[in-house]
Image (cartoon, rainbow, N blue to C red):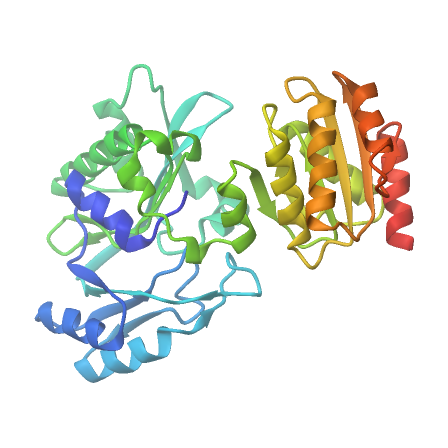
Length: 387
């Protein structure tokens, strides 16, 4: 789950991580009130959406007076902000963060992420702060410092010193970044974060490290332990179909293709998407109903796929284990009768009670094509596209 910058900075402040003074605003007048309360100009007016690259898209402006705050807030609020992370469709800006300007001596990059290959938490840092870290990684990977922390032994002082010296910090600045990394690491562990990123992390004129930006993502599977974090979810920032799928515990990601798919198991879902592409089509989604899906979940999966107007056909690929083939077939039949499926559907099933599942489908009276194997499924999907 993602949250906004202003929400992430609230968490930072609670941990004792230095941030600029400022507040969120939902209107031009609110933005003006916040700016005046900061007492000094310039101030920064920042669009709040779940995407990076806001500055390049015109979503971050420096204001040297109340009139400029009013002009910038009026221009940014309600705009459809397009960045490299939103895609061409963009995202509507519904809120702003208005913050004090700072005396910036140096811009850096800092993040904490889990590394699945080593089962460590990685502190990544770079002197190329304020830049797209993906571009730095691609063109100048040597400029990214990585410090690996074993979660069993935890963060040690030498980890912080490694980062500090790699960023060419000295004296009081070393103490400041050590305290910041220590507090961020504690928050990362305690809140089950999947990402903590500051770009840029700045060194001010008084040798204090300050989080000028803040991005925090959380592990969805751990949200049940953090009801206060779950309340920060902003559904306006998510694709409507993904929000709908989450209500039924469906693992769904909307894509740009034309073939919808329903699969049980993430690995099988990825393989199914490959099959669709090999067949000459493009997957319209990733949808994993999970091993313990009920017939009701299957019905809702169908309903969500049919809400996507891009979907011209559906490929179902089920391996019956915990989710028996007959249970799945019952869900398919009920979905077809309740929602009125009017596009081609190809079903490939194997596993527990597969014969019973196929019988249920055959006796349903519905126009559902069955496939004997993955190759057969791919062939039939290809014929759907050609048709």
